[in-house]
Amino acid sequence: MPLVVQIKVTPASGKQEWVIDKSGILKCFLKSPAQHGLANAELVKTIAKALKLNTDQVTLITGQTMRTKRIKINANVSLKEFLVALGIEQQKQLTIV
Image 1 (cartoon, rainbow, N blue to C red):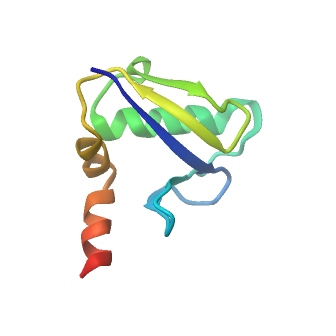
Image 2: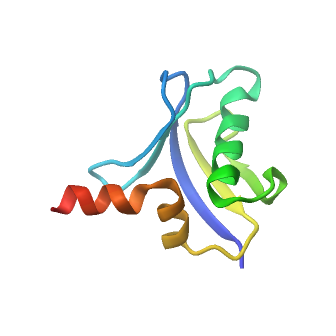
């Protein structure tokens, strides 16, 4: 069953990092600028690499020109597995302690 997630992206940030902000929003900082779809391509590639999927299994549904994007992952992946692959689950544990 596909997984759909909403992600807030910060392009051209000089780093590649995933965090959950204080309001619970999943954020991704990307190195690529938002020009010519470079940041979108980096986002898709980063997700696919983290989940060990092909890039064609990760689709940008909405937000091609906006910072808030909806991504569809065409694989049998749970939200928890997705967060663990991105290192978010470890971050949450560190924050709680």
